[in-house]
Image 1 (cartoon, rainbow, N blue to C red):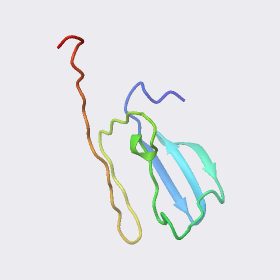
Image 2: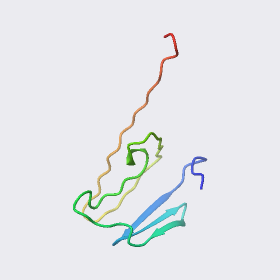
Image 3: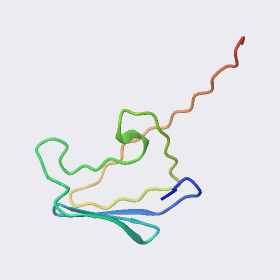
Image 4: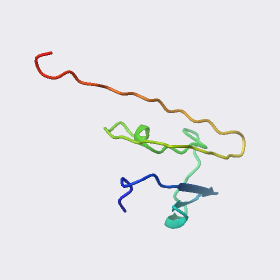
Length: 87
C-alpha cells in the first residue's frame, strides 16, 4: 500500500498480546500474540521515522494517543539544508 500520496489516518489497537492496524478505517493487519510484554520497553510502541536507526522520513499532521496509565510521545524535528558544491 502506497501511503506517500497524502495524509492517512492510522489506528493501532493493542489488546493483550494482539495488535491490529487500521489505515483510513480499513483493517490492514491483525497479529495475534505479536506483542509480548517484557521487562524492557514494556508498554511502548514505536512508529514513524524514529522507530529505527535507519534513514527515513515521516511527516505527521496530528497525533492522538490514549493509554492506560498515561501516554508519552517522544519525537523531534530536524531539517538539514546542504550547501551547494563550492559554497
